[in-house]
Amino acid sequence: MGARLEGKVAIITGAGSGIGRASAQLFAAEGAKVLASDITAAVEETVAAISDSGATAIAVQADASDEEQVKGLVERAIADLGGLDAVYANAGISGGYVPIAEATVDDFTRTLKVNLIGPFLAIKHASPHMVQQGQGSIVCTASVAGLRANAGPIAYSASKAGVVSLVQTTANQLRGTGVRINAICPGLIETGMTKPLFDLARARGSESRIGQLCPQARYGEPPEIAHMALFLASDDASYVNGQAIAVDGGLSSTHPFVPPRKPRQVD
Image (tube, rainbow, N blue to C red; front, side, top):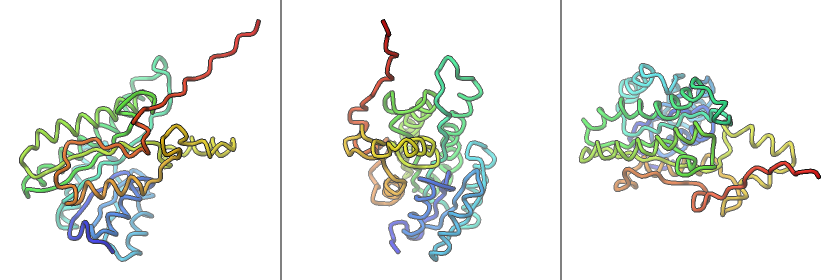
């Protein structure tokens, strides 16, 4: 077992699958006591795997976009695990691909609530405790879609751009407190959220083409994002603050874009 988070307590949202699950398991393997949270009961499976490895973790089924429930996560970590040193606000939804003229206010609002208001609430309720103790790290999941266009749906991309700004502005508001905050901008990663895309490609026999626009010519795996989250949560990143770090195989170096084909005209 590693020790990069030895003696620390961490909250991870969206820990029922994908990036959140991989991060919860990695944080625990590196010595952290983990409060793993997800809106689904799948978070129990994440914690069971951690407990089987001999590490300490508790599962809390909660909505990361609900203020009282987020406040409860912070209180639970402090009361049951003895403190709070790191928060990974990772929970998110895609919102689906809908042309902007067909998007509804309710759908747009729901995407913003989970992807942007969720991290805001994590920061709001975790940072006072961290400021009081003079140290802490907050990590938020943004996306390469929040850096440039053509990497995700409109509402999703807008919400993730908001996360980047949230991290930058909060880092400055928390200046001198010892609390750091950063964002990870994943590229195309195989998770529960992207499962429909992967399932479709496999059904078509085109799995080998997934991620082909990226300089590494492949898609990413959840542990590759989890390792960046671990770095940012640990003291190894003691001078990294207010950053939005792309972990995307080089996709955002150009953000290549293949426009939809126009129907061929028939004479």
